[in-house]
Amino acid sequence: MVIEQIDAQLPGVVEDRHAFRGDQTLVVAKERFLDLVDFLHREGFQMLVDLTAVDWPERPQRFDVVYHWLNLASQERLRVKVAVTDGEAMPSLVSRFKTADWFEREVFDLFGIPFEGHPNLKRLLTWDDFPGHALRKDFPLDGGDPFCMEGCTAPYNRGERN
Amino acid sequence: MESIALSKQQLDGDRMIVNMGPSHPVTHGTLRIVLELEGETITKATPEIGYLHRGVEKLGENLSYQQFIPLTDRLNYTSSMMNNVGYTLAVEKLLDVKIPRRAELIRVLVSELARIGDHIVCVGINAVDIGAFTAFLYLFKQRETIYDLFEMAAGQRLHTSFTRIGGLMRDIPEGFVPLTEHFLVECEAAINELERLLTRNPIWHDRTKGVGAISAEEAISWGYTGPCLRAAGVPQDLRKAQPYLGYETYDFDIPVGTTGDVFDRYLVRVEEMRQSLRIIRQVLDRLEPGPVMVDDYKVALPPKEKIYTRMESLIHHFKLIMHGIEMPVGEVYSATEGANGELGFYIVSDGGKNPYRIRVRPPCLPIFSSFDAQVKGRLIADAVAVLGAMNVIAGELDR
Image (tube, rainbow over all chains, first blue to last red; front, side, top):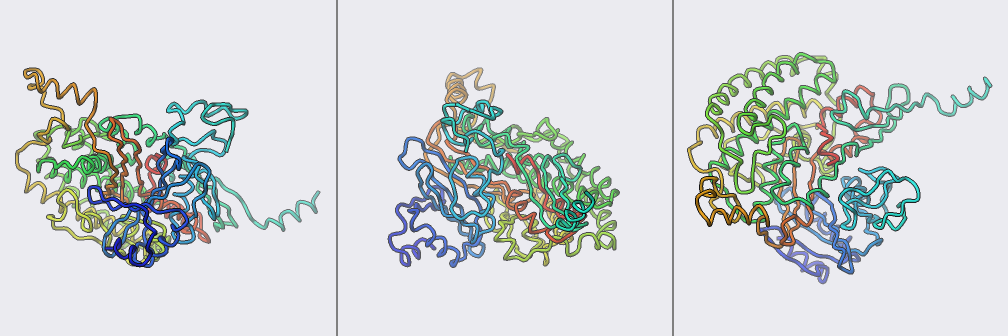
């Protein structure tokens, strides 16, 4: 199992862990995240299956960025979660996994989490002028008035258009 | 004026920008690709997606677990049965529920039918885009039968919503199995005819061999799954690698390509159709009468007769409809082998009636993100072939 090896080789990286219904989850601090990624890559976790985020507005570190890796040789799956505050950037994985390109753009688009080092961090699913970030919990379900192109003062957006 | 025009032309060369889409016959859904051309050669392709973005994940956070099932139909609308199955399996993993054997068998049966239907669309339309019209017509007759079967089972052809958490909406009706047996024979013949038309066809070879070739390492880095990954030589099929629904008990093979080009993807898909027919035949042999829903009224609605006659069943019914299923707190990721790759559902539950977060991992998004790398330096005609072989379904791409 890769989890014991992580403990042996990278002590102190894993802040928390849990296993639920056979899914292994590691919670990692942002500072040590890239060390872990490089280790996982060496250990055969070469496929970044999925990258997404979860919004927890009441927590001080509002977003969980969730990575799913798959080891094609041993068919082991691993979920890694990193908590970030609103506006805090995550390191981009595009140079390591090409598939991170669009996944990170999607998370940036729908949650507003920037990725440092991404070559082309633009919105993916919504258009450039779209007010707010649709998958944040404070974004209204009906989408507000997405065609309000200028001077949008919707509360969820604080008048910003980023 | 003339000199300015000349210098501008010299600066730009023959560079031209062409929009492919948003509404173009080869874009199978609504997506746009901005092509920068140097004559006929593509120097850059910028896909623009999101035209079909309906906020499925956002809607899922505001619907109960059962209510999300119809939305999964609208992801990959060419094989909606498999989306139904994939989603309900994820919720059942969260609940830790084991469904009855007959429900498992029927789920495998409709999944494999849907896989054949999806591959028919992909291969048939890919051939049409390249100019081979006849293959498409032969195959679409079979696809009609598949949709007739779905209509018999679920009452709907495309948006089936056939599965429920804990089993199926209902049992397959009388006449379903004989028609499936008839289909097995007809479809086998149609696949043979398709192969006679295309597999040794020199024009088909010219248009597809070497186009969109990709190495196994590259394919993994791009996050390829499904037939596109297997065509590149990686024998990764979740039905074998991480079996679900009892796939480990079926006898079938995984076709693997070598170069990952459009021709190999075509061969892999054709062989997968044959293997799916094999699986369906085995399912038909195993089908035995039995329930298709779990006998747990905390998860599944009690039968109508009981609701009308027994107090306790009525309470269960009321609780399930008004308060939803009692969900454990936790998170699961469940992946199934969809027609064009790994279809994953990541569900975060806070114990409430609705999922706290529901994420759909669409198989074609990572595959399509490699489009620029796949067509750079090639001709527009190759872009058409590559796009078809990627099997990009916009409903799933944009969600």
